[in-house]
Amino acid sequence: MFAVLKTGGKQYKVQAGDILRVEKLDCVAGDKIQFNEILMVGGETLTVGAPLVAGAAVQAEVIEQIKGPKVIHYVKRRRKHSSQRTKGHRQHLTLLRVTDVLASGAETSDVKAATGTADARRAAHNNADAAPVAKAPAKAKAAAKPKAAKAAATEE
Image 1: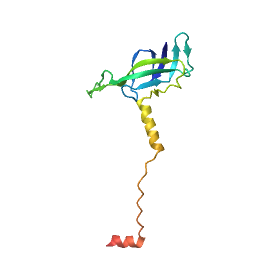
Image 2: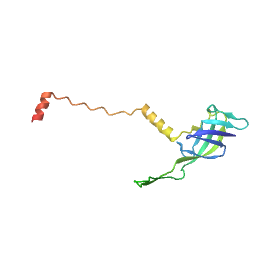
Image 3: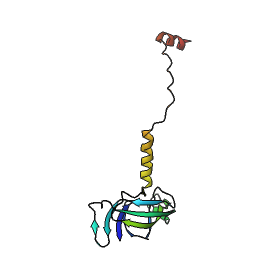
Image 4: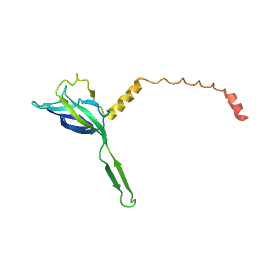
């Protein structure tokens, strides 16, 4: 049985036992996670979602958090400026082992849903807004001086 899942803006065709490198997810090595955005499930019968297959899921085990290969971006400007610049980048990835493809019954499983790091930051930010921190009381403002007192103070 196979499934086509969507995560990190990409689509992957997976089956049980596959090793997968996906965009960084908010989890640690050894966690069991579940992908709920399933576009297609195949096996004896093919089920295509519109846009997602209801009740389908892919469960996976996190092997480790890794970095991808280094990508070098070289910029050379011509003519009068003669400047060069080299920038490197290594994408953060999560290495997974697919353990199970569920055609139905994803809602009843007790496995944590896979979320990206951006989703985790957004959820943490929203939770911080829900429980505001108690602020210190504001200082009392000084009483305003009458204009005559101000004028006398400036003349001296």
